[in-house]
Length: 215
Image (tube, rainbow, N blue to C red):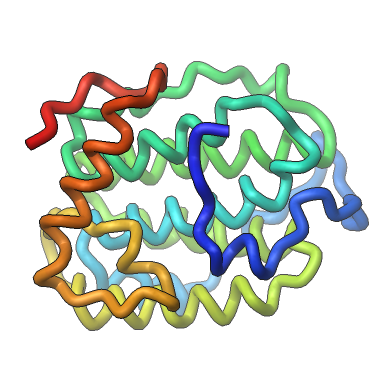
């Protein structure tokens, strides 16, 4: 696996938990709307919303990491964090085909990455994919064995973005650590954290990454 998942996810999710929810590739619709939540998420910059989208997708990807060994979702997540630092570092189209991702494990993984791709495309164009991020929230709630830790994290993450990354426009790049409840994040740490991440992924053979020019 190309990406190391944060402790706050690994401590609260079993990656091999059996699938107990109902799933039908043709009829299941878990992408619900919540205008109130979308409004709160939408208070952040475009990059802030994109970062929250990646964070939500990480919960979903880790939940299935013991049940699926397809590297695509994990490579895509790794590239996504680089993308919100410099959009041209990431190849946002993922090339995966819906027909190849079937069943109660692979289809939710595909939907998570497809929704994240759409969010990154919108954010990189200066739009604010708050409603689409709400869809990821509902997908995570549906597939996680226990959604309570995720919802607690979500409230924290939105609050931290409201504190440090609120406003209009593209906004500054958001370090992954900004969404970590166990990390005492301060905005003045951002530059070093971002540079450290780019140095890390520069060693990765990731098909969704263009070669970053690290400091």
